[in-house]
Amino acid sequence: MLVGASVFGLAGSASAHNYLVSSDPAAGQTLTKLPSRFSITTNEGLLDLSGHGAGFAFDVEDAAGKFYGNGCVTVTGPSMSIDPVIGAAGKYKVYWQIVSADGHVVSNEFSFTWKPSATFVPAVGASHPQDCNGRSGGTAPPDPNLGTDTTSGTSANLGLVLGIGGGILALGIALTLVLLLAGRKRTKPADTDASTDRPDPAQ
Ligand SMILES: [Cu+2]
Image (cartoon, rainbow, N blue to C red; front, side, top):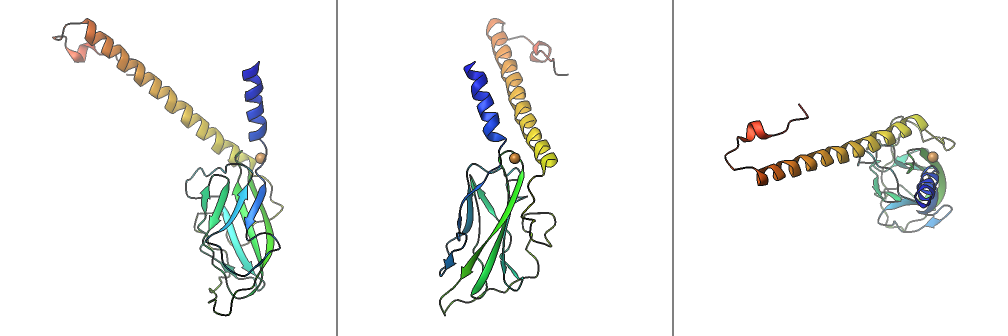
């Protein structure tokens, strides 16, 4: 009963999308100095199946429609971050996209104002967001109303679960074989031919 309840609880929390908890810059902030990274932080761990942020995006756009940064995001636990690259003073928009713990893609946007010191050297913007991580459709900002990509997310999750399950099963079989062989060696004389002695259920 207790086990059932906890499994149900896990499934319940895992089926909800991650949501934004904080960002740097913050929504509506007037930024005067660049942080070490631009970042967003969500409520729980993100799903970076590729290990290099595929499906994730952090696009910075100025008021003239130019994009900044190399698009190379780093995913760490519940956070995603990118090198802070930006142009001249003005209004900016951040378009972000993440893959939730449940495999669903979530995206949204927020604005901030950039007001650097006079010595700041602005970066040159690009007409499209850069696609470092193989994100598809990098020619336009992510649709803020885009909620889910259930099919790919679910199958990716399933693949991961099956992969882990298969790995554990294979490990179990290997361990059993090792223990069986070790047991036989102890009970039999050493002159037994190993090639005929070995049980071979896998072949
Ligand atoms: Cu979801």
